[in-house]
Amino acid sequence: MNQRDTFVNAVRDCAALPECVRDSATSATGIETSSFDVTYLEFLDLQIGLNARGDEWSRRLRSRRSGLTEWCDIPLVGGRIAVGSDDYTIKVDPRTQAIVYWEHYAD
Image 1 (cartoon, helix red, strand yellow):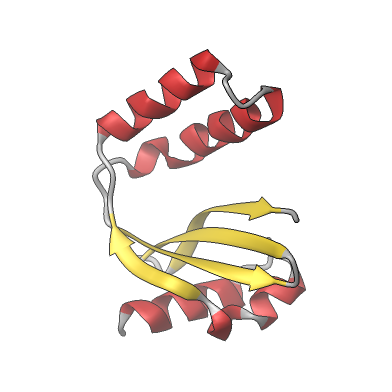
Image 2 (cartoon, helix red, strand yellow):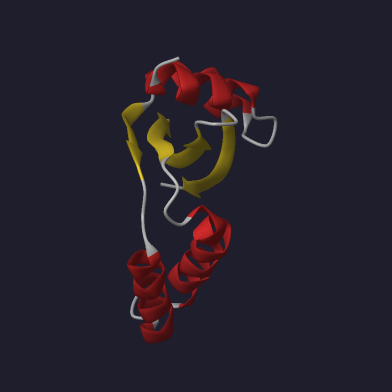
């Protein structure tokens, strides 16, 4: 299965995502396989400590760090889905074909 199919199928099958996102799975953009290393986690720690964009953003970064830590150095298929004026960024483990992390950006 190619990375696009893996991503789309995982989104469609994830009950934790809003229905509007699952229904928009085929409109996903920027689908690619990538990984990050410990320097990304260190960067998140630095940004959280600086709190330069305020408490709400720092909470998002803490959540991201917590949600992605166990996936350090592991390739994930990522993509973005726009639903109306909202965006969702999603990470999928291609081995299990399941979503491991997602974020919602409201207008």
